[in-house]
Every structure is written in C-alpha cells, then in structure tokens.
Length: 104
Image 1 (spheres, helix red, strand yellow):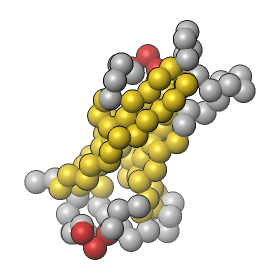
Image 2 (cartoon, rainbow, N blue to C red; image 1 turned 90 degrees about the horizontal axis):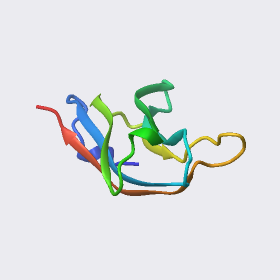
Image 3 (cartoon, one colour; image 1 turned 180 degrees about the horizontal axis):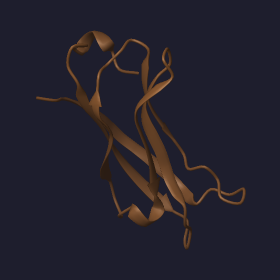
Image 4 (cartoon, rainbow, N blue to C red; image 1 turned 90 degrees about the vertical axis):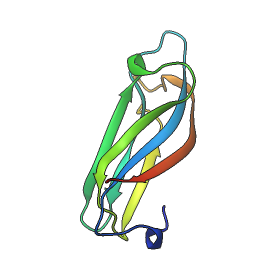
C-alpha cells in the first residue's frame, strides 16, 4: 500500500504496473487481474482483467487506473488468474514494479 502522505489528495494519478506472465503451453483465459480499490467506500478506481491472448513475452506495462484520487483507505492490488476448470492457465506472474504518476 502506498504511503498516502507522499501524494496530494487534491490531484489525480495514473497507476500502472510492470508485469510479466508465463502462460502454460496452449492455455487460454485470464493472465491476472489488478486494480485500485477503496476499502471504505468499496469503490474501484480501476480494475483490469488481462487475457492471455493480449500478453506478450517479457515485461509489459498495464494501466490500472488513469484518474486515481488517492484516499487513506485505498489499496493497489494484483491477483493471479481465476482458475479455468479448476486449473491455473499460467505458470507464473511476476510483478516488477508499480508506478504512480501525477496527472498534469
């Protein structure tokens, strides 16, 4: 969870994650899901589900939220894919970093 004291609550931010997915051979479905969530209001400020057909080899940037107004009860989260037929379609999901960029 980011240190909210470093962010200006009167501004909005773009949140993105640099992720690498290693799919299982021949697998289809979801690669991972991620977003920005406020635990007080139960509101999502961004929520993505990345399909394996949109994954390239190596690390890629994924935008989780384009206009996030930070609050003390917010979380930036990421989860593994939801299973298809009781099995994961990926071998591994690697999170390299998360960037929070002030919108101008």
